[in-house]
Image 1 (cartoon, helix red, strand yellow):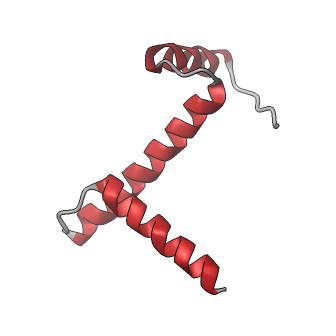
Image 2 (cartoon, one colour; image 1 turned 120 degrees about the horizontal axis):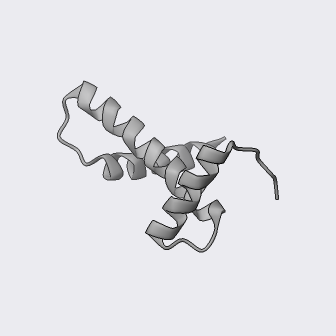
Image 3 (tube, rainbow, N blue to C red; image 1 turned 90 degrees about the vertical axis):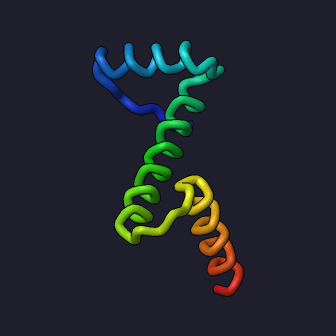
Length: 73
């Protein structure tokens, strides 16, 4: 397990998110934030390509492709 340092304002916002989302730990909050960041990045890329694809589906597809690449290596 690792420890990270955040300022007081960030700590309060993380605590608020944890309570609002009903997560059991701050690790869950951070994972959700990272996942949302990945989805938004994929969504931006999909919008640039002008393809009508759900961002979450695109993310799942790219993760599957990455997994396939790892098994080939």
